[in-house]
Image: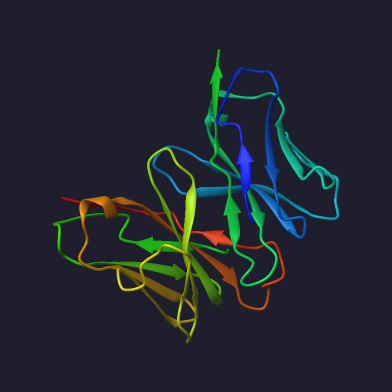
Length: 112
Length: 118
């Protein structure tokens, strides 16, 4: 079946790098995503990666994809207090309507 | 571009009443829209997939008669929570996939609607 798992909480010091990890089960997923959600708000697409890529970098964000292990990570360089939020990993399921399956979300807390 | 709106953003209703939530793609057409619900401090759970001009596809465990979905045009899908009860209180989020770009990564989310049933 389809399942996405991620750790629930991460605490980092301002200026350090944050690494949020995610595992998924659908080996046929075409796209994998990272979304950010601030309290009371909707989802903001941070970045995505196509399944035939190993890495994608976008300013402070680096996504690594290990298809063999079905492991996805998001690295945020120079983490700032404004990065405090919940980060959701999602996979685009193969077949049907290619729905997005979300992980439980990782709460990132950035402290001085 | 690629903006999805939801209306209302917040609604409080009495138990037993029905509530309609609208999801609109403002600058693109969407043959497929998705409805999610999110309980506090939890993930997004897909409720149903809405397709323009046809019946919605509901996820297992979601009551079709309770959560009525209508996708009447290429820019509008509505979710009606019928005979709402306090356990239906949640954050409802829609998303839309642009017509003609169904195989791309694109899926745009609305800002969400917070429903509170008293």
